[in-house]
Image 1 (cartoon, rainbow, N blue to C red):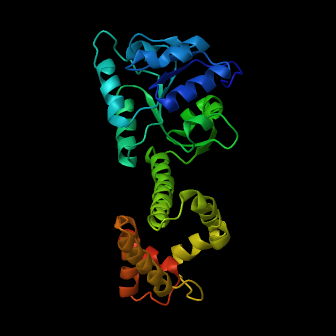
Image 2: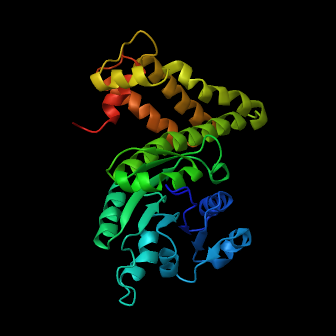
Length: 302
């Protein structure tokens, strides 16, 4: 919905699983949706649901005040839209238009893209979708956004259809920073889950006997560290009380994981990376401090 209560037209560029899910959700919410994709056949289901297929990227941009971009990275956006803004037959193609880029890239790439859009008369909002495509529009779906607050506020009702908008501020790089940081935790956890499964299956244990139980280790982490507020405070002031789970004790376990992996011929890149954190923390004098002291050897130099 727009601020007036009328479903606003929306363009979606990029029809991978995420783009198709967003287009479908917007159509179901009553928005006139225009779509474009390099492979037009990916739009078939959306067209059947009521979307309009733009013949060119320029037509897609022209069809709506708001364009949502869902591509592999930001370079893909330039590959598609640079010819549009450079086309002398369509001066000011981005004039007054709003681009919401939900593609993955770096914070600096988002800042450069915002400047590029501004140079061509457009506004730019960075987004990071924090759920898989099947969850778009469902309860619990959320998306990080950053960029000009007035532009975000104007289009927030439309963006809310996709998932709960979490606005982080005017810096276009913030949403990408939060997205990458959250995915840092997610991707590492997924790799550790597969590594652990490979470890037990190498010993002849069926994955089905292991995986259901180990998932409680992931879900139990909040019970260990709470809601994150106390941990954040400790990291900010550099306090790492060593009454429980010291770096020396946890480091010994990290070493045992590496040696067990080597015994069974399982890839050791991930456990060695984790062990290196403990080794460096111990070498830096944090052996009797809490495992959270690893932060001192992980963080950027001040």
